Amino acid sequence: MTGARAAVDPIALFRAWMIDAEAKEPNDPNALALATATADGAPSVRMVLLKSLDERGFAFYTNAESRKGAELAENPRAAMCFHWKSLRRQVRIEGLVSELPDAEADAYFHSRSRGSQIGAVASRQSRPLSSREALEERVQVIEERYPDAVPRPQFWRGYVLWPERIEFWVNGAERLHDRFLFLRADSAWVKEQLYP
Image (cartoon, rainbow, N blue to C red; front, side, top):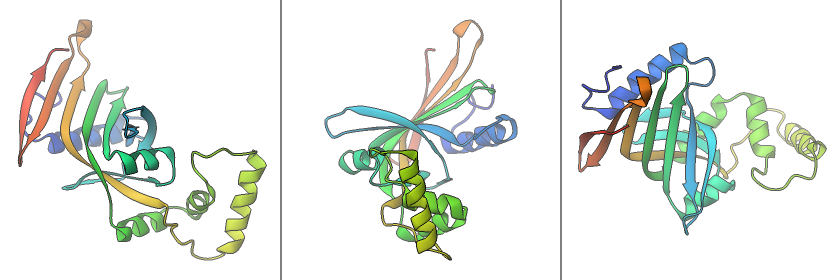
C-alpha cells in the first residue's frame, strides 16, 4: 500500500513518494498544480515546480508580479496537487504561504542556467504580450545589459507553503481508492482515512 496505511508522518511519506516519482515518473516528478485565489475567493491554478521541502514546508519560485504572485499577496492561502499518473498516486496539500528570505531566492536564482535567468528578467509574466518578437527583443536587451552575472530582479521571489492539510490518494480497483488525510493539530498530525 506504498506505506500510506502505516504512515504517521506525512512529510516522511511524501518524501518516500517523491523518491518513487523521481525514479519512475518520466517527466518533471516535482511538477505540481498550484491553486491560488483573489481576496474575494476567485480561484486560479497553474503548474509550477517544487524546488525544496524542509521544516518550513514546500518551496517554489515565481515572479511576484504574475497573477499567482498578486493573488498570494492579497490572499496568502494556497493549495498544491501532485499527480504521478504512472504511479497512480496523488497528494493534495493546503496551507499558508509566505515568502522565503532574499538570500535563498538569490542562491536559487543564480543556480539556474543563464538563459533561465535572462528569461526571468525579461518576462513580464501574466501581462499582455504584443508579439513573440517583442519578447525576443526584451531578451536581447537583457543579454546585452548583463554580459556577465545577471542580478536577481526584486520581483522574482521564493515562496513556501506551510502545510495544514495533506491528503494521500492511491488508485484502487473498481474505484475503491485509498485516501488518507493528515491534519495539523498544534505540533502533531492527526490522521484519518477517507471514503474514496
